[in-house]
Structures are given as C-alpha cells and as structure tokens.
Length: 413
Image (cartoon, rainbow, N blue to C red):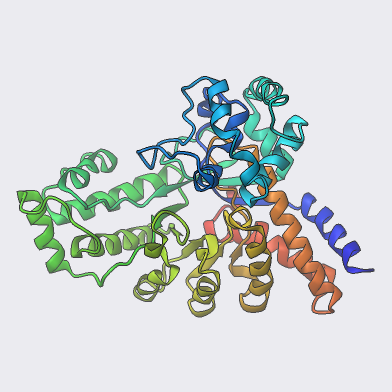
C-alpha cells in the first residue's frame, strides 16, 4: 500500500475516532441563538487579525469587534469584501471556507452568495446547533472557557480564569465579586479569596484554571505586602509589569489550583505583544510546583520547538495543540512530526478549536488537523517506523484518552 492510500485510510479512521475538544470559548448555546448571525459571522474571531493586517481599519478599542454586530449586514459585508481575496488562502480562512461548504453547501463568499448564506445560517441558528456541530466532528466533550460554569450543555465542561488582577486597587478590589463574601483589606484576604473562588468553581464543575504566561519574578511575600499596602493607601496608582505583588499572587494562585486538584491551563505564544508570552517564562512555575499539572496551550507558537522542550524536560507539562492547525497549517504539520520524535504519547492533547460564536468553524479546523495527522503518521508507516495499528493507538491517545486522563473526564462521557 502506498503512502497516499495509507493517508486516506488513516483520515477515514480519524473521522470515526471520538474527540475531546481541549479548548473552546463557546458561550452557553442561548447566547449563540440570540446572536444575529450572518455570512460575515464566519470572519469574526481570529479571521479579524488577518483582515486588519491586510488593511482593514482596526477599532480604537483592541478588544472591540473589528466588524461590529450591531450594524446592518450590507455594511458589514462591504467592510470585509475588499480584504477577503487577500486573506483567502490563510489557514484561518481555510477553516471558514471548509465549514461553509460542510454546513451550508456554499463554495464561496461573494455578492451572489452572502445573502443566501445569511438566510441559511439564520434558519439553522436554533436549539441544537451545538450538538449538530459536535456530532459532525464526533466531539464527545469540549473544554470551554467563557468565564462561567453555567454552560447548560452536557458536552461542555468549564475551564475557568485563574484570577489574580493586581494592576490597580480598583481591579484588585473588584475581584470581591468573584470571590464571594470576602472583603479584601489585606494580602491574606486576597489569597483567601482566590482559594475560595477556585474551590467554588471546582464544585460547580470546573476541571481547570487558565492563566496567561508573562515574565514573572520570584515570589517575595514581604515585597508583595508592601506593594499591596501602597496600592490600598493610594501611594501607588498603577503597578507596571513585572512587580512583586503580581509575582507573588500569581504563584499563590497556582498553589490554589494545585491544592484543589485542578489542571493549570496556560496560554503561551501568539497574542498581542507576544514577546511577553514566550513559553519559557513558564519554567520557574514548573520548578516551584513539580506536582501541579500544566496544560501548555498552542505549542507556544511561534516558539514551537522551545515549547516542545518544556514537555521533554518537565514531567508536569502536557502540550495542547489547540489553535495550532489554523494559526499555521504547515507549522502544525511539521510540529506533529517532531512531537512523535520527542514526546511520550501520553503527554499530547491534540485538538482544540478555540472558537466562540462561529462554532461551525470547529469542523473546518478539526478537518485540517485530521489531514495533517493522517499525512504525518502515514509517512511514518510508509517508512517502516510504526504499524498502522500503532499509529491509531497513538492518535486515539492524543485526541481522546489523554485529555480524559489529565482532566479527569471519565465520568462525564
């Protein structure tokens, strides 16, 4: 059997293989149903980065939508139309076009199709849309981050933000609303609030806590307490990164997650000023917390090889390929090959769609990832490095068994 035949056979096997989606930002389905979706919705979320780089005017607020949802559809379409040909062949766009064909039967976004696409999307935007996407993908569970444990869906499992906001007194004290009946007057109050919050969300069903990696210094309780008191007294208005208060509280927050038996999910790599998100900034945490479990997102893209070395050197690291196949399909392809070489098969979580409102694109993203898996493993089989049976065993670990084991999901399937 030649390599192409092996690849096609593996892809068919992967389509039937159950998947744990290890990273989404999906809101409760009710939010999606109340959203006025249209053809342009396909180019919300990550496609907006490509649109802005291509020349589309960004909003003044970096967190605001590039394509506001509250303006007429015709104006929304006019905003993206000149830039669509320029981003057509990016990995982000590829997932959108593939999903458009899968769910709505259209091959392209153009003046003739955008209105029929919009009509089809609005007709399909009804109760059960999440299950239709999950069923098409063979996704059994999706780990979901929308800052709420009230997801109201049997296949959605919450991962919550690990909160330790200390930049200003306003931000710090505002966390009382999350902590519940904890008045923050002292540093110990803040730490007690974090611990209480982590314990509460675990009881509500959370299986992990998410943080973003940045450069952090060594935790210093005395220096942290001095800064806390200066913020409280108004002697410091804004604490710039890095600072002793943030360093110490972040470390204590990780301790709280570990204490409650929750996985620490960590965003690394591409986003904003990505210089701050080098995955190697995680090393001090790995050393200080050898018994904590760290799920390192996105392979640290663009520091993929550096990130792989984290899992090769630290037993408390798992590598999560969420987002990777649409950030760059070809970097993902190469990374999969290198992961086989270097990382034990029980330390990889192979897929996360990383979408919020345009949930249909999960299918396109997963299809790109599956094709890459099939290509790489077919090459290994053709070269005599493994048998097809061995390849399927590894892939099932990556896509299904490992996330169940890491996050304790066996009783939720």
